[in-house]
Length: 372
Ligand SMILES: [Zn+2]
Image 1 (cartoon, rainbow, N blue to C red):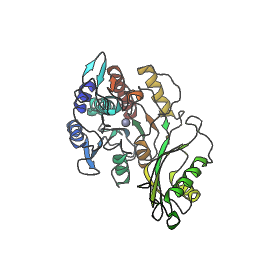
Image 2: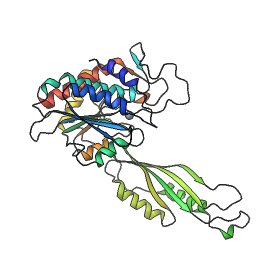
Image 3: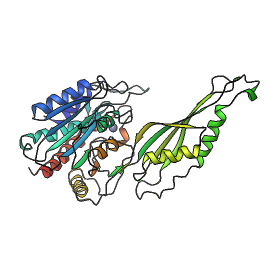
Image 4: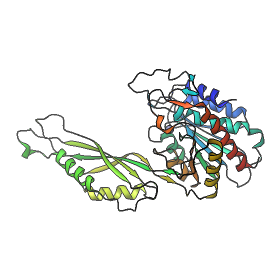
């Protein structure tokens, strides 16, 4: 099977999230993998929201190589597409469609790479494929797998096939999105002394957040953690004292920052006027680029795709935030055929040449891992 053909097949499934509805797409991949000899487990986190874990190979305690990717896609956006987002049109070496870059091409490339070697993988450490639903809404599918005992095996190394133009990225920042809620007592706007104003409490919280210091040294590649207040909602009408307000906070962390103590520290700064709750929680990911397998990936990518050996980080977060700790903290690389700059865009496309290169890179990684 050819990876471009498989990408086009996957593009035809409308897996726009929300609502997702990944089941039919997941089952299509499941059938391909089962007929290649994989043991496939469906792991829905909600009705129709199906992730797959597929395993081939068994060699005592030697852990498999993991490939992971998501099959949900983001909405089409308000601008009219000039191409059919679900038809998989190709033109001038580009394959168009929602999910062509992010990231059905990546999933197709690793499925084709490992099924082409499947007949030789049974007596080796083999591979495990983790194909997730619900990634675009804060890694719902991956978080469910990570929280389900026995769903994920330990992995020896992890390849995340998100769009990087086949340039390996050795990590990314984490994301912690919080809601800070304040409450008060409503009263008529002409008698504010009879009420307690929740917006004033929220305003004090926002000013504190503007001055908040993380107290960590910057990461050599990812830089400093950031905090942004993205929205505030409070009050219903101008002539009442508001009794509720909510502030949306977007924090991007560096890999050494654990989110639980960070949230505790923020809560203690904000004090008892404010209650904090997480909306999205994905910790950062980082592997030393000098780690021997990571060097091997860089060497193969340079040879096959002509990309430089610079140390890079991905600008977005990935399912690895949930999967890497759950699979034994194996070395993790993000490398895939899509172009990062085209993810979530109108008229999203993937270069056909990059898809072919990814198949070759993933095949080579699998061959070396399994000694076939
Ligand atoms: Zn993605």
